Length: 399
Ligand code: PMT
Image 1 (cartoon, rainbow, N blue to C red):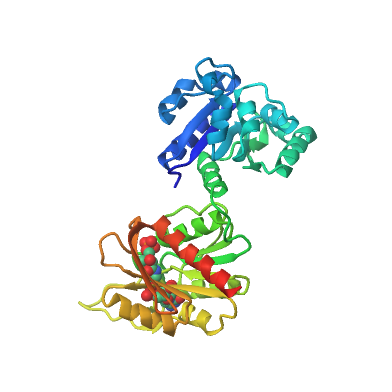
Image 2 (cartoon, helix red, strand yellow):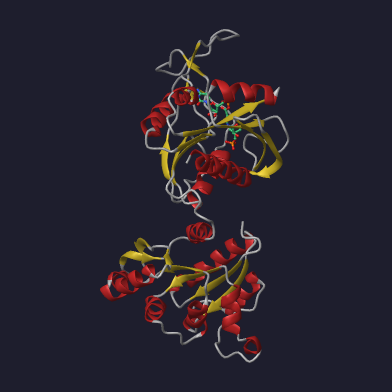
């Protein structure tokens, strides 16, 4: 996700400095070329060698470095940066930036950069709430600096309250968002994901193999692209995506209610969930006892959420999925027209690398005008972005 991107990670002197080692690992694992600049006090907490080893780039600590100055170190680094993230950012460094003070390698390079700057503050709660600090933050926000707010918790200084550095994973997500064009800004996306469970009795249920990975990837990618996202999910083992409103449901009936309650406020609905088509006619109040050699379970059809949505779309854009095991395109075409969707994403779930649980998918995108796109094997993240690119095009066409 960060291939070809140059990121500068600034580390300042706070106890949370050790957490930026994990942030560095996430940035490099995603393919970023990361250059670390440490202030003098940051080096009291973590050694430059740790960052140098993990980034595989020299760590900058001094403004007047004889080797680096041949090409004016801070300027060349600032020019190459796609994004600058400072984590942790102390009250001191935020104060300096707000006042235009550039007296070390870090502050000088930030002032010289034209890339996006993301600041993740960490400090004592009273320092954080101090009006002078708040004024500095406000000033930087007005100048386009982005902030990843600290969280409430037990602080290293013994106090409890706001001031704890946000987790490296969330700072990483915010960095990805800051580097992604907001082409879906202003849109409200409703995404469904995961399986549903239809209870037979208090201990058993009917379900399917959906892990939620496809739908969660769409929700994450849409948030990064600037959309307001609601994710309605059946039971999965996945963490709730950052920045996304999460609604957890169990059964197809609950998913129906949750979707219908929110459909009105959505400009786009993407239904990646694997919804059970049937449920038991009766849910036994107690665990069913073993009887003879066979058992018959009577099922009744669930309402089809997508079909209901397709009946009264208005200006809303509807994207459906089709999970097939035979005659992929034939069945998918039928669903495209019967469910009245604008785009249908078909996957043959028996194909290697496609469908349930895996990290990849092999999809065919069926358009209303008969076009079919077959991009081949892609990560679910890449499939999500392809779907969202097509959604963006359809929205613009509609305008
Ligand atoms: O979750 P993963 O492990 O990542 O797996 C991804 C996936 C295989 C679940 C996903 O790629 C996928 O194909 N999702 C749709 C699964 C499905 O239920 O397909 P379907 O062909 O049975 O349904 C067609 C469409 O109608 C789907 O958009 C479905 O959400 C919708 N539907 C189905 C039944 C129902 N009662 N209500 C619905 O809205």
